[in-house]
Image 1 (cartoon, rainbow, N blue to C red):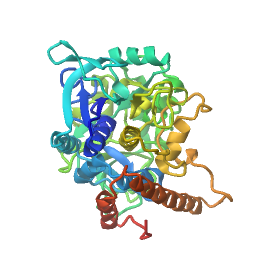
Image 2 (tube, helix red, strand yellow):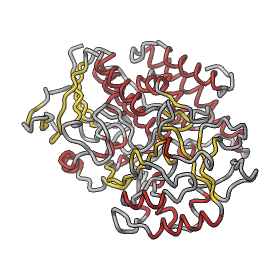
Image 3 (cartoon, rainbow, N blue to C red):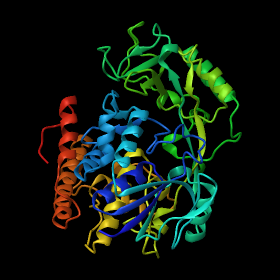
Image 4 (cartoon, helix red, strand yellow):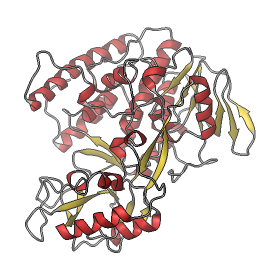
Length: 483
């Protein structure tokens, strides 16, 4: 196929989109500004680097995040395959070794002859994509049949201004934060205990730091008084609620962390035989367990204050930090007013957006948006009709919400049951209602996959889905029902 697509951004969405199009014979220029220009939070130069957390969330089949992964598998996601290969234990969640995951994506892209990887910072869109290369020279990509902007939440200032010029939108920023990572050999094993919630076997996938009432009160008091990088109180509209810094959560109420990221529910401290007053959970960052992420501890504190305050967590008195938490600007579009149901810019025939810049939130959501946009672009290139994902599916429900012009005051969102169309007739029991959502999603997703295969958009190879279900079977997380 003599078709060319330019993709700006080598994150989760851009990498997935490039691999999907290349596998279908489309030539791809994949433009990524790193390592020529770094961001405040990226540590390396690899594709699909995860910066805020190493968790891709729940694998449970009857949860929206679990449904989304199953949908990725059914549509043949390349990055889901990389995530499974780089998996580290995390209870019922899919977490990965960041370095291994990024390296796997790098290798997959490098092995694809239809992808040309270009290093440079995009500075213009439109009929041609211009960029500043690693040597500081202005260059242009070849004119393409479509352009996918997948620059993520850290879109460079130059490109953000270009997008603002095209869209006429000034609603493109909010703040996000990442949690710190500590070295395992600097933690006190006499205090920390290994346990997943509601599991007292001692074989859990999380380390837990237990607090007494006095320890919790001292920690929160010092947290609230600590110096911040951005020294102002944030309003709700400034922050993505799922990634609020812990100090902002504490500012909303002294006990708020104890009912959120520091909740002790389902945990028993083996030293006392009782539930602690509060607890911090630590999740392994890599397969060897050499470093741990402080779960839910996104922060805006200065680095010295992080070192001082977070060492007040029991068991972290001598913690060495592999990475401090950071707070940064996130860039996103007001998708309901700007994008159609294929994530194409309204009024444009060739410009598409994918990933967090398109107004979705979450790692798997970014991967799926890259995959979905690639399929929609491919369908247009081969002049084949492709309808949107059914609104009863996990990502389809999010697409419908995110691109509905009636949606107002839009903020990026994870997949969740709140955007699913209700079950008719209504089901009061929550467990039964979730099961009904799942059964409806399975039926509609199967029909959709069959439709795409018949249209020549999918090749009918279900190896990815077999790999995914094999993992669930191995973990005892599959209900046994057939797809």
